[in-house]
Image 1 (cartoon, rainbow, N blue to C red):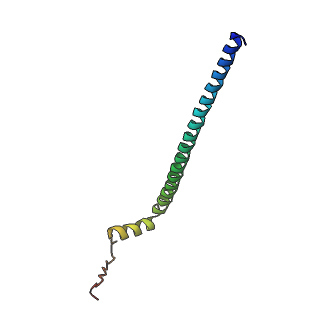
Image 2: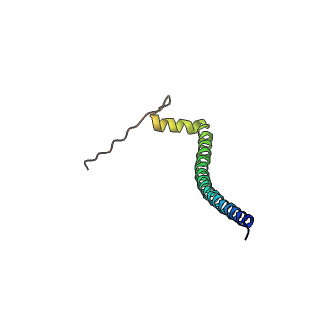
Length: 93
């Protein structure tokens, strides 16, 4: 073999090794990106669900009777002419 052929073979082998190393790093990066994408997709699905629920809540509370019912339940609101009855449970019995 001539020196020229040896140099060409060494360069080709070096290029192949370089390509294999680069392919390995690309494969590893692809796996990491796939994991990140799955995490982002999961987070986005949660946000879409939350947004959908918020839109439903807005639609529900936009109806005055629903809003009034919630205000009465949570804040003990009494409209004019209404009476509030407080029930006390006796725990001793």
